Image (cartoon, rainbow, N blue to C red):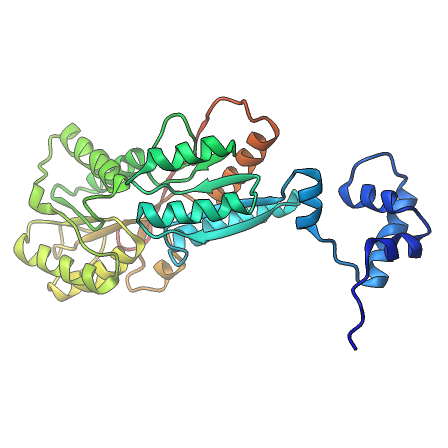
Length: 340
């Protein structure tokens, strides 16, 4: 027969204290001496007692769960955000409850309902473009604090932690112009993406500021997988050989463009005068960027830092629910390597 699981009464008996004292020691509330807390912790370790946090939360009408809804958990950007969030929340005794919603409103609402049914203390999400208001209305009715970590800012009445996409694209375009490039294309992303729209806005505005041309045919959509990006880059450079630099929407787009540029008979690098090299500059750095030949340059907003800041802000909102919405921007920087 299996050994019964130890109960809180067993911990109290082993430590020589009352059940209420054990509860106070576990919750960190009440005036309990350090010596008593040590005795309780020693009893817990000796017996292998595991606290039923869900039951404790139900009794106290509190929760230590923070919900995180992202579109794609395999995306390196969101993986790093999740890591930063989890790291910061665990320091404060909270746990992350992760769900993947894809890009549809219905799946995101389904994930949201599950989160609310689990009694999460707060929500962090990247809202879908479709049906955003209905999602936030549902959260508001549940009176749960929420932080948007969308790559594009969705709603001014919701706390936002993330990049300034327009500024990042401005920074990237200006960097290429200062290297002498005058024919700069934009590759990747979907026409439905708000992030892409913001970045293209920064890219076009910067070209116009410097009196440089941009053409609609130089702004090309493609899937984020490397094969699609390679084909799109090869076609773009073969059709428009004047292009000497490409801004790439995804990290995977940048890696794909590396192969597509070579397939178009071009070399890759910073020098757009000798040998007509093509510069590649992507968004959101990845470890693989240092393994390619040549190594790839990126405009990067540290996603781990976005996660950490989102964790700090959601805990602040839980403690002070009437705080006005804040817009917290994690600044971008250019990581220059061999490709630009």
